[in-house]
Length: 302
Image (cartoon, rainbow, N blue to C red):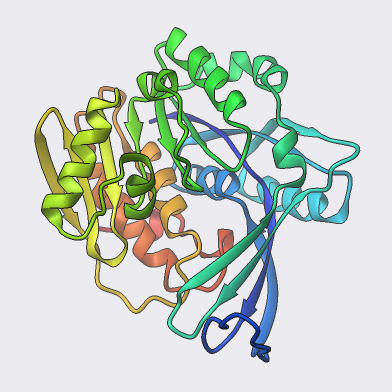
């Protein structure tokens, strides 16, 4: 799609490299430590703009050095920042990522200014949403803001993509009905539906339940196995590209941003867009860090 708007979080990621994840009560040495831009919303916005879409970001930052660090990153990518506002009290969001030698991670989040995004902030960005082709949101910012954004989007015939992460179990029926495409991973899908996704049949059952909750189009991402698309009783499976993963931190966000950038407005090329998004994600997992690992469209070939 030509114009994408993302409502979501901004975090500065501190990546702690360790041999394996610690057990309770254990003290471990780190092999390395580094900082990078992150936050699910920011990652998805960066992925969309690098995927070729004109991208506007609705977000909130603090008055601190972390904010300056993130804004510099956004400027380099040409992200539209007119709807990024400043909270004078809360700090810019932060994430602390434990990354093991196998590329798996555990993440601790400080929400900060991300948690102060309000319905009024969304209303102030109404013209940006109304002029877009697609709106993306996730759950690292208040769900009330997402709900208002989706109301505005649907009033203006804008396609809505919901990434229900971090996982929640108390998602309103209205939000489901305002969502055109929902993109959980298997853990998030299980949290919503109660269906444990262990094989293709159970993943389809989980997708069918989401379908019946009011979301017409469901994509469940399944890590290194790939992703499943489901709508109206029909399913397609897109295999993941086989690579050696170094860091999976921004894999899902890369997938969603590229998916939005590559989808046609009528959504007829869903499987093709998923293949392209999967390729971009496979490139991202081969590099440590979040936003710095997200590829540019010229490097994504299928």
